[in-house]
Image (cartoon, helix red, strand yellow):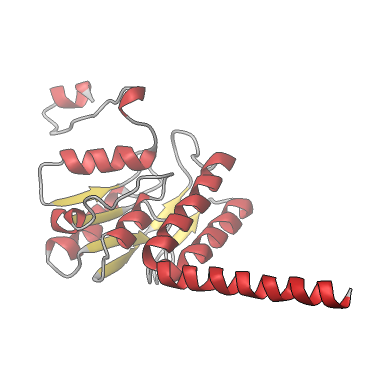
Length: 209
C-alpha cells in the first residue's frame, strides 16, 4: 500500500488490532463507515472478483437504478470457473438456505455496491457475524431495488479460503438471526404449534403404549 501511495494512487489501508475487532464482516463495515463517498463498493482482494467488472457493478447504484447491486454467478452471463465439485455443492446448499430471506439469486456474493443512504437504514440493526456481509446488508437494510450484474467468479489467485467448519457454523447461526429478524411472528407460531403437537403426541403415547 505504501508503495502504491508513493506512485500517487489514492489508496488507504485500515489495520485493526485484535482488541479492536475480528472477522471479515466487521472489517467490511468499518471500511464502509470510513469511506468518504456516497457510493461504496466491496470486493475481494484475491482476484476471485474481476476488477474489470467494477464499472458495470457500480453503474446501477451510481445512476439511481438500484440501491444495492450484486455481482452474481447465477444470472445470465454469470459463471464460475476453476471451482472443485465440493465447493460448488456447498455453495448451492448455502444459497438454498438463504432463499427465503431475499430474491437475490446469489446471496453468497461478497462483490457488491451500495449507497450510503442504504447503509444508514441498517444503523443499529447490523450484526456483523461470519463472512456473508452482503446478505446481512440486503436483509437488514431492507433493500428493495437490487440489481444483479453477471460476473465470472474464479478460484483465488492469492490468500487462503475462509471456508472452515467454524465459518459454516457461524453461517447457520447468522441465518437463524436473519430469519428471526424477518419472520419473528411466523417462528413463534411454528414453535408453539410444535409444542402443542409434541404435547398431544406424548399424551397419545402414554394412553396407548
